[in-house]
Length: 462
Ligand code: SAH
Ligand code: SF4
Ligand code: F3S
Image (cartoon, rainbow, N blue to C red; front, top):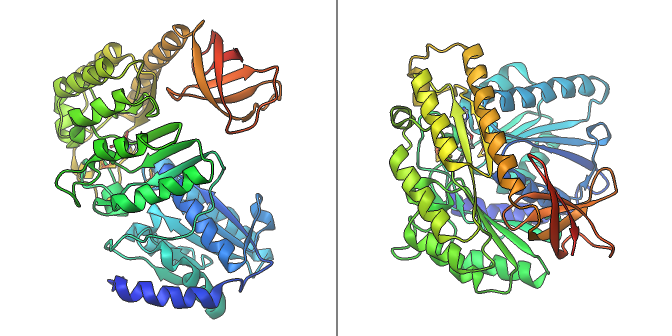
């Protein structure tokens, strides 16, 4: 792997780019995105790069000349899904020799995956890492021209690239990256290795992007980062997520969201700002991972059950009507039944509005790989099931409390059954609803809630 000179890379890329614009007119591409919102947004950038080259998007990989997998490494099943897809593509390529297959995203940053691709997946034409997406056009071009496998992965992050094109998935809500990477090094997590250190975008660049989105009529902006609460630390002494949220809230944008928040970097100014502005959505994703101090320490999470709960209640008390969601891992190495019961009791206390629950998945090269694990998979599965029963109970209970209230909803479209519209409330709840007036995606409407389910609410436009 080579260490880049980013200044050189930048100028060279511009020149190369010009040469490549429209070169592949008429060719078709298919992109499959795994993983988190960061990857979804990267796919929007990748799509724009490909479309500049002339590629046109198709929804079925069988119709494509270029298939790109934008991968995720967070848990083993994400890995397996991508390798499963590669298996299918291998067969397809037997019939379709000119098919170009590429891999981007977090798996591309894993040395062991790259080794495996080089050794066992020779039909993969290129691998492009998360730190050099800007080079994707020339990597694709080289792999088509030379017919040789191209592996371009930087092991170290460099500068941020501003000004890359983007094809937004829709025209009413948009992702805006504010910080890349993660410095937290939770002992189970692969992200700091695949996404590099925390690097904030300059506030001027972010605000300019937001202005552009407002001009284009966007209604909702989600500020993205693996840990948005660390925003600005690497750039400014006195400008953090609270300041950025405030600067954006003062603009003419109806909805601002942000994710994900690490409890460690959450300060009072941020909570105050979230509570103060109506257009900052009262919805906070605050991953707890475990309710046991012993396990939190082994995970390297930098907070205790007590300090987490203090923060949780401060947010609840300061932000009117806030919905708090979380992530929880069960079966971390060393987790006993007692530790697990501490997670259960924390959930009983927090009564989350939403929760993503996972069984610990060992990631190669992370410190948790070395911690002794005595718990069987079936026991972990049983814990997950018990946990899910409790979290689901609270989703339903929280939703039932909303029956009879009126929620503001951003319309997304018509539901699968075609008899209702659907959209998300300010607290990020899925609402299915009827309306006598015809609505368009991107409309904001007040919906009276008529009934509650575990994962959604039904209602009608007032
Ligand atoms: N940056 C976010 C989380 C990003 S990953 C944060 O820390 O708040 C999303 C979630 O995946 C994590 O919160 C965690 O619950 C889960 N996760 C990460 N690594 C995992 C692993 N090795 N096994 C199981 N779940 C994992
Ligand atoms: Fe992973 Fe922890 Fe960073 Fe979240 S904060 S991305 S869990 S290392
Ligand atoms: Fe997955 Fe990478 Fe996101 S590992 S969760 S795609 S940052």
